[in-house]
Image (cartoon, rainbow over the protein chains, first blue to last red):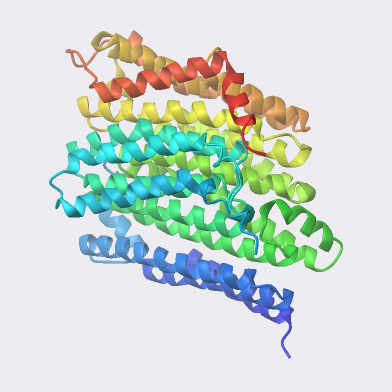
Amino acid sequence: MPTLNHYLLLAILLFGLGVTGVLIRRNALVILMCVELMLNAANLALVAFGRSGGSLEGQAFAFFSMTVAAAEVAVGLAIVVLIFRHSGSTDLESIRLVGGGAREEQ
Amino acid sequence: MDFSGLNVAALLPELLVSGGGLLVMALHAAFRGRQDRQLVWVSLASVVAALAFCLNPLTVEPGYFGSALSDPMAFAGRITVLAALVLLLPGGVAYARSRNLPQAEYLSLSLFAATGMMALASAGDLIVLFLAVEVLSISLYCLAGLMGERESSRQAALTYFLAGSFASGFLLFGMALLSGSAGTLDIAALGTGLARVSGTGTQWVALGGVVLMIAGLLFKVGAVPFHSWVAEVYSGSPTVVTAFMSTAAKAAAFAGFGRVLLALGSVSEAWVPLVGICAGATMILGNFTALVQGNFKRMLAFSSVAHAGYLLLGLMAVGAAGESLEAVIFYLLPYVLANAALFLVAAKVSQAGSGNYKLDDYKGLARRNPWLAGLLALLLLGLAGMPPLAGFMGKFMVFSAAVRAGHTGLAVLGILTSVVAVFTYLRPVVYAWFHEPEESGALNLDGGLAFVVWVAGAGLLLLGLWPRLWLDLCAGIGV
């Protein structure tokens, strides 16, 4: 029978996986997925705490954070598409190379 | 079920501003963009209505069963954000028009971001806090990329998005651990919830949550060591958007941050060293990096990092020693007024000069427009903290609160780095008054910009001479 601690351990592992992914991967889309992993780790922790504490607050919070994550992904993908149209790549290193060292200012 | 705690009027300022944003979008669609010049008046009307409702007696009661607060912090945060909008929207629309940016999008996204900022300042529970942070962040990601034709604006949007959503992950996971182990979402009750689990294994989960949440918030306010995104985002975004990010968004983030730290005062030994190191590093790095910039926009960007360090120092005093948030509340308004006006002046001077925000554009400004050069000096010295301007009172209050809370070393560091800041801010002033102009011909301000600069200058003087005016107004609000 899994207890609260098991769920928390899984949430912490997922969160660590997400953080590691954001820090070591260089592709904007993969980073986006790793951020999603971090947010879902938080959702898992919220629901597990809510269930074990017998209150619905955690579940309600998880619904809000899912909605926010969807909005965030919509905007993030739009930005990535905009970049991809101009530079033909979603790789952070090559996007920066196209931009050159000195950036123009508005 | 008792509905007396559901005071919908508590959120009227936020509702009015977001309603204004929706109306701007609807009017833009209804007139197919032909009447976009009038939209700025619709936006300003909603902002002024929201300002009026901040003082409404119904709005100064807490609402939504304690989720939306109405205390001095919420009032000050709302007024500061709305003041920034009043100063920035007319100039922002003129900027957008001259560079062919979509005006309706600029206005509605600014109003949506402002809704999030105001809600952040008045958040009573963690769900509202998280939603408010996200509403303001997502709107600002779009605003940063508004100039999508430009490489730098696209880069700024991507960098801001990646850094911001990474920070949101930390914030949310920290909130989950903290609220779960404290057994409450109510920010004010977090302290008692934590006291109940102290000494058990759950305590470590809660402390981990506190650290993650503070890391997320430090990321959002651009403090060292989470400041790497600031330079690229602030210099790449359209200038009026940068102005909005570094004034209103930062003020709101500090209001929310202050509320969280105030509630976590009972576990202050866990986070005071952490925040203290970050505050010291932020003051040093922000001020010295600003000092060596040859670009006015970047200089303002790094000086706003430095100001984040002073504000963190003010927040440390709050959580640790039961000081009130008064010093932080006071610091924010003059900072926002001066910075908003300076960014608009920067856009104007740069457009008339190199187009590159070079400091050289300010050479001989006094010959070309003595009033503008005088007000520029006033605003910059106000930021530097020269008496009798309001920046001095703000710094004085923050440093004395820090000394009372026992952080004397950091207060001394703050005073020393303020001296460095004076040199940073004096450089454009010296260029304006004691250098020969590279271009001749008067540099005339249009009516809107002149209004902004005069209002900001007068505000700095007024707040500096009568600081109690603003503090008493805030202290008289709500519970």
